[in-house]
Image (tube, rainbow, N blue to C red):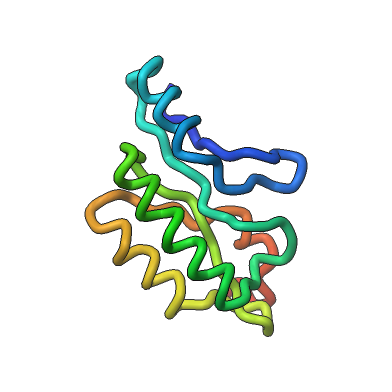
Length: 110
């Protein structure tokens, strides 16, 4: 196993889990755990309040021992929201980040 991608509410496409679940998983397994940062299901377009929640969640999960993050934010036009994604990458610091399922919803993939 290369890594674990941790989320909750898999039926909604995956949402951000709480730090307690991450901590318990890290206690039991030695493989890296990448954590989904997604406040709600839907189209990967987030309101300002949801984006603030993503940053808060990410900081808490980083503190709790996340080895990396999985997220993706799009604009209302269906393009990658470079500014917001970059802000999360910067918040992650040296931890790796993976752009997730939002890719399937991008209007122009070229």
